Image 1 (cartoon, rainbow, N blue to C red):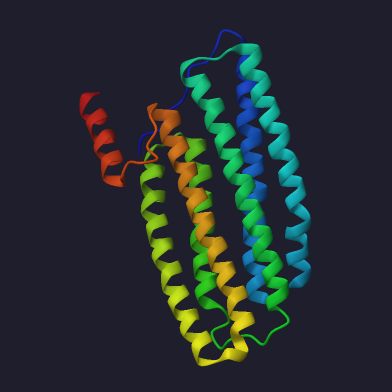
Image 2 (tube, rainbow, N blue to C red):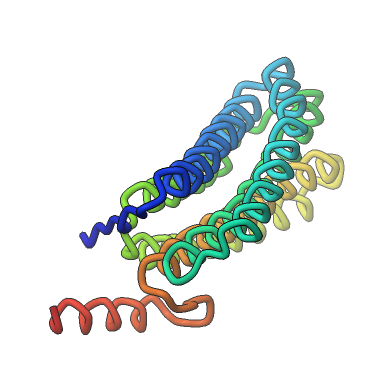
Length: 242
């Protein structure tokens, strides 16, 4: 696995500012990760109190995102960074936007967990949603770890995992649609559960984005429209030239 570090600057204060931004982003990521974990747990255990904790935390995440975005803008204006420093700040700005949206989706899952707690539970206790939730939670952890290690390979792994999440969502959609056809009395409950699955699918998309930002930060080019194979070929070519 390729791991990178960035050069230190003559200005210790500039180093401190960049490190502060990175640490704040990671702290925000930790809060969002906890929100997602709690939202999935609240859903599976019908824990409405825990779901409310997630809902109450969302405003904190929104405020952190706003404050950190302002701090990044000030650093750009004051320091006029270039090259890898500018990429770092841009990657942070983009990452905190996706983290804020993951927090929004976690809040939605928590709200639907409260709604679903009023219905009788299916025989499998939403096992498919639990598995999907754990998958996107693991993706979030990988994305944040990618920023810590500065490992562009995480973008490839997350892109591949996102495809699996999309496929699993399609499977759940077809399964739930058949349930609604069989029992019209369960339509409201099944629709809420389907919305949970959709939020998880969207979280997978945002986690994939985190990986792409890491790749951009380390490698210096945008891979949003590249396949995992193309990204891997670029890394292999770089390794062969070193």
